[in-house]
Length: 130
Image (cartoon, rainbow, N blue to C red; front, side):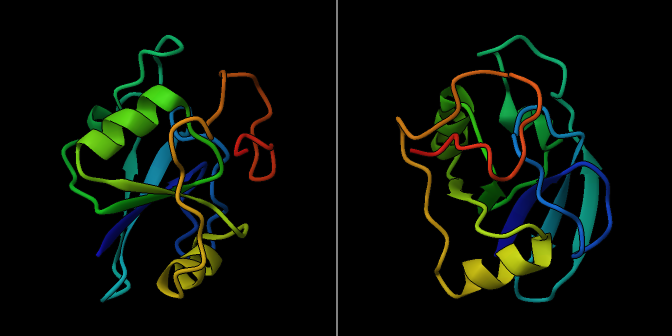
């Protein structure tokens, strides 16, 4: 399974998970079966609020799931419509969240449990999930 983790900088599995999907500088794509990691830039980082195109942000890479600290409703809907499930990060690093994901211990984001805006200072514990 291919899992996408928004990150500020690529530090491999030690990378902290970024607090908001749409404004993340990049993504770390991890194959949960092999542990292979691919770092890509966010191709849709600069956009108006509500105009996020998360699938374009992934630059054509296909993933099965996204693990993030926060996400807006529009991006969640678009990712879900493209067949991707989105989960709320439960730890700080990609490695710790990957372990939680594999243990089925991450909460899936549902409509209505998302961020309301692009305010600065998003981090893992910013409280976007309800």
